[in-house]
Length: 293
Ligand SMILES: [Zn+2]
Image 1 (tube, rainbow, N blue to C red):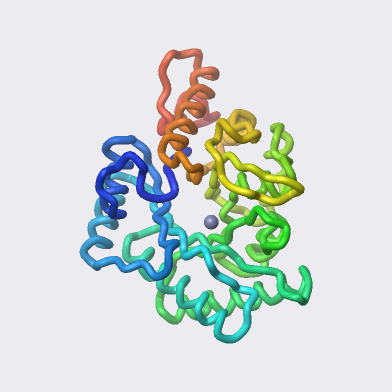
Image 2 (tube, rainbow, N blue to C red):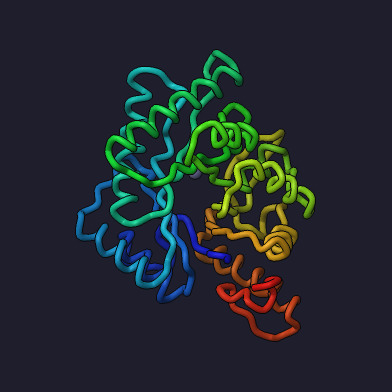
């Protein structure tokens, strides 16, 4: 199955609440995923809105994810760590009320201790965080995101290591970030194959994939750009996903948000039509092209 949506309230949506954004995503855009952004400080949401989002998403089969505030440092100690925990637990509590599938979290920063010790420290803290979530009866999955700058913790290998060491933690596969960090490493089908090959030991049944164009230099991301303005091609990835019948959710985090989510949709449908030879396709229906499907 392929799901497609964008990170946050669509730009073209007049109403600026998450509820408005969700309804618009389904009714106007005909997309079936959204990653709600709780990124600016502490987000307040009334129970009523959370309940509405929960019911609407369920009835209309829209998959929800939540992005926790950007500034989080799971490599910190003491107070800074507590603040990061609070932000994540708060986001996760809301996410659970809304029936979201995961909470996307940025891992943190390398301290003076170097990469290996930072990794150890983050693993230790993520375990502790999982314990706290459990205590609060929060069952939502933490999705730890790959990051696009060398000095920021979060290469694909590091994220995979956390996920293999801490149960129920999954990766948020930020392709723009991986592309920037590897200085333009995602160009061909084999480059995308390598990502899935590395992820294999995690035995994921579903992949949360962020897509955006990105400007970068020397393995460092500068900023996001529209998918077409970047140099990471989508088609080899889409072909691979269709060939392998991977269950994925694409979240556009390009500056064009839903416009690029729709662009992803068009690319997926083009790939389907290429296979069926028909002049129409719907990204939600892979029955004609999936083997034994
Ligand atoms: Zn992020």
